Image 1 (cartoon, rainbow over the protein chains, first blue to last red):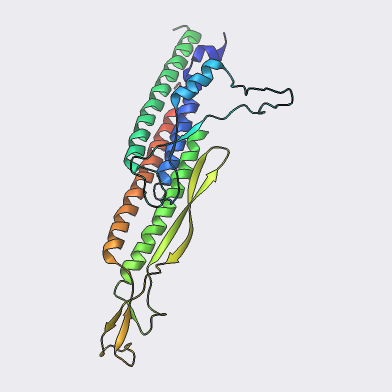
Image 2: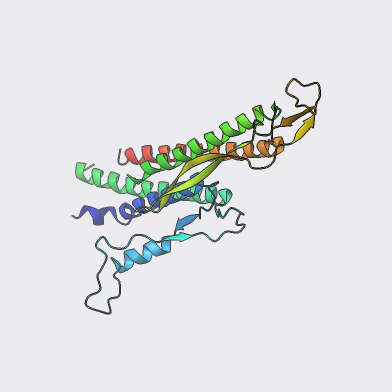
Length: 127
Length: 134
């Protein structure tokens, strides 16, 4: 049995969720930095990328190259509701809410993964 | 481990905000300082934050790029009895605005608390991840 397929999508979702937490933590750390622009990851981008497999650049010429490590997940800039004079677009309340949501989602992925692992262990032990 | 980076990010935020709180403390302590000349008068200290972008990961730590002095002019005050008064009887006050500094203090304290919360949450998630399957 392939361990990756046994653990399902949650093993892939967990690093992505951790990545999003990292991006939101970066936004919150820079809540007062002039010129800093808030960023976020979009889950639908990641889902689309996972469904299509590794993204491939369109090559219209045989000399066009493909990136060696594949394409990194797309970080999008947040559209500010109330941009400040110093060019900072971090809205701390919005970022805190997004962080809280991302934490719950991370915990959900963790719980699912935990359930899968425990199920496998039970099957191994024959309980 | 990606969650480890949260400690680094939130930690940089806490360091920057504590520097800001320190400058506020310095400014408030010297709000009533007077000097014999405009050159010697205390000028409010302001920290300059800068984002240090990690290009590979797309996240940014925050760093205090420097501390600048408030360029606004210092005010003079007529106090002929003061030992530092010049020939015309004037002393030079600091250009610290106490109201501004109080607002700055609240903002810095809130931002510091936010970073502490992020750090704590990241720690809990990391510990939960370490207990995976147990």
